[in-house]
Amino acid sequence: MKLAMIGLGKMGGNMTTRLLRSGIEVVGYDRSVEVVSQLVKNEGMIAATSVPDAVSKLGDGKEKRIVWLMLPSGTPTEIQIQDLAHMLSKGDIIIDGGNSNYKDSQRRGAFLAERGIGFMDAGTSGGIWGLENGYCLMVGATPEVAKTIEPILIALAPAKDRGWAHVGPIGAGHFTKMIHNGIEYGMMQAMAEGLDLLKGKEDLNLDLAQITELWRHGSVVRSWLLDLTADALKEDQELTAVAPYVADSGEGRWTVMESVEQGVAAPVLTLALQARFRSQDATGYSYKLLSMMRNGFGGHFVKSVGD
Image (cartoon, rainbow, N blue to C red; front, side):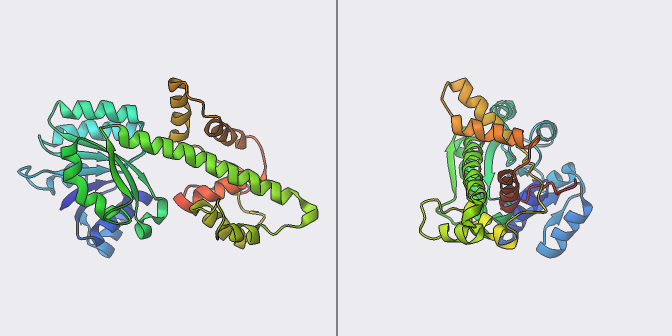
């Protein structure tokens, strides 16, 4: 198979590498010429100098052309899809693997369907570790589009029979990923608060590196987040270089808004989001832990002390 990958950042670049190593041809474009050059040199990617150039290198349109977008949600993705609608033909497919709002995906899918262009919204989880471990892919599409893209999903996933699923119609992929990230907020917040309480019991002189390592084996709270936390605490239990500032991505906010729209109580997810807001004006060990965890799984920016 062959596809174009537009956006070769932390996720897009690693996904491209995994696809190439699985025998799938990738035409790649990114505004960073250096990033494109490295993937061409190290992995054999086909370079494109622009999005139109990437589309042209997929062929003359006699066979399905597939374009996967890994761009920031909102305006950048919107503009690119609008532009691609004029470059592609009936039967071609656009995949949005970024963190778009599912309502935008539903609207974009309908817009492209009027032109006979297929669309898939792919909620993508795995962070900077996806290249090695594979990505968890939650996709929304018509059955026909999902079947066409299946070999690509299998190449990206941890295994042929797990880590990916066609979860429903257009919008279902990004909706599922949105709720996934809301749950992630709550899990991280609970872990950070608990460790903050352990640290605060100074008369017991608890070793948090020892305790988090202990919990990784046999405990009901063992998880990848705990693994990342234990690894970080081995280096520095005080997290002295990390500022207690935790950014929030759109999915957490959208999850809380969805709970309001549905009238479904989601107090843990809501409070976890509010805690991130508060971190931007407060100090505390738990916020350092949250920031460290985000960096551990996703390579997200960590605000350093003094920034």
